Length: 509
Image (cartoon, rainbow, N blue to C red):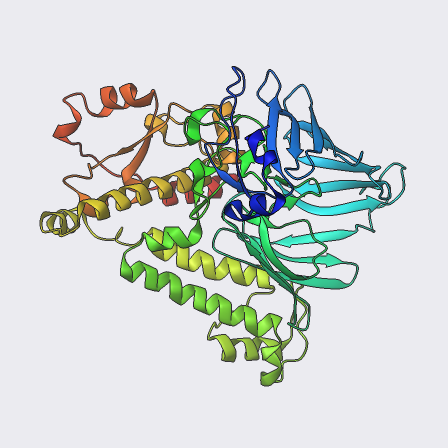
């Protein structure tokens, strides 16, 4: 146990030590590298130590109470594909999990632990949960096949930041609607009912643990809009994260894409980053906006303002002031009074038929404006501006990263349309396209090449069509695009992914 000498101190002294804080001790295991990177953890019940199996999966965790020296042991079982199959809690309760071929968690069981046995079946649309069927007895859980009309809950989603993060609009339990509000990294921070009354709120610490909560929320989605289990684990898709310690239970299946520590969450930077799939970190929406130029930040604010105004008008009943009447979300409407009131309230001439359509319409318009910002300028104008550029080194680097992030998103969208992609001008293999489409992850040897180098063309740094995926790692990138050395720069015609994707989708239709 860490620091056994603490047990010799009086309870009062131990209580005074850093407000019941405990420093973890670490033991290096050949097959399970250091997972806790020197964090200081709140002593929620005692000091924690973990064991891992030969594949690097957590097999056991012991929480030792510093006052009584008693130990509570939690055990973890894994299947042949290193997916968590069961958790045995200290009270004897067993939580079991089942997965499909895409590692989507489609079945959940809970047995013992002083609670009624329960089984849950989850149905997905793509990679996101759509509805749940539940039984409260130790019998076969119901499903869309045996009981298609009676899900315990339905989830209605809109645009998100990847992996469903920040995209859960509302849930429907019977006839009860609950609308969700998320923060900049997708944590669900509040719920309201159909009357616009707030019924639940929550505050989160950096790693997703809730520090304050009011009201009740029957949904599972909490930090990063991901399912939180009674075990204290967060299901992030391909892996589970321990909310108390802030680390993954298993190694990163994508390898070292997120740094040398395969257990650290988003390189220990959860304030401005999140992990949409349990594979690699993404920059949070609010942080991404902060990297934009002032005029682009204003454009985002303007569109978010329109979206918020329209959402409030629909959800909170502001439309009643325009004599519109009751609005049913996510259902078709031909109410002319509603149409007129919507236009008068929001200034949007063509009303969508649902809050989902509304969000997609406004975000699409804003996203297109931002993504295409500056693209209509001729190469000559861009070069002339670059010659007199006053951008600082940091601003250029931020622009370069934005360009790569945008290129990754547009490349994934292009691949999802059925196009082979732009990697080295030849595209991706079928296996690679599947990986890109389903996870947003690219092969490990991918590097992102600025066609017109950033040094001489800083104003083109954040242009997604100026960024081409290169294969073969760093050496392959240099060999193909910088044969005379990286200091000599590069130039060439840019891509046009939007036009290519549009043409591809038109052909498929």
